[in-house]
Image (cartoon, rainbow, N blue to C red; front, side):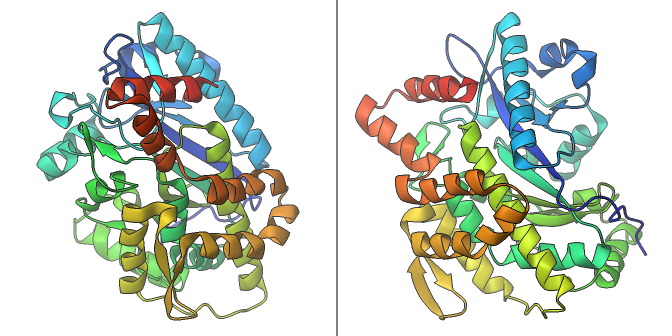
Length: 371
């Protein structure tokens, strides 16, 4: 079977954020990742990384004992890349998409993995001008990791709805709360994953993909939630990138609390019933279009309910787990988002109140990113 590292301390947290590099005059994306990487100090080597386009950078925490530590690391990293960008004539911003940048204006990073991706997927990869947040949670057994990922799988649409922060795409209001979602939907091996059920089944199916030459390794399975055997984590990848750091912390807290709850259920021997793919995927489309302002199908009650109601119930269900893993305060912020609205709603309200010049929206995002 596939080798793994699901044997470390459980419920450690790692967070990755994808951020925008911006021209300070036009507020368009600028191709500056190599200048930023050249200035990253040695103590943060490996925590600031390139992505597919030269206008994108990733910051990543180390494995942290709790959400508070991970959030503080992210704050340090946001300040670090902000200061490096400023020294090099750039700004840093955060959102699920840049509201008016064009894909055709972007340059590809000169790294073999990304060049191969463009060679393999062409137009599909060239459209991937999107920004997301990934949350890793340490799990201490391989079968438990599959159980946790299978459990989070059914909640993916609600996590997307809460994090929706990309209503604009290439200068237009898309009418969606997460335009990032349909852009990434064109990729292969993405979206709602299979319900694997056990480590043996997961290993066998990854082996079928690698053995047939379809993929080089499991990291080319870009599911919305996936086991990460090399790191010993379950990685949840569904989130639009948040502008506000406290929102990132809230999404990480909900992910950690869900992971803890499902790990408890695994230890108690509770069977996990597979939720049908087509229902989860239908909910995901609903979440991308309406965010928290629409309805999602409640599988238990077999009818649509308000996304806000579903979120309130889920947050209540994991409050005890949040207390166990020390993130009650950050989880409370998720409740605040349910009541006050998502990043997408804030973007839309900003444009409604300040006019159609999307540069002002980007400037506001830069200010919130730095804060």
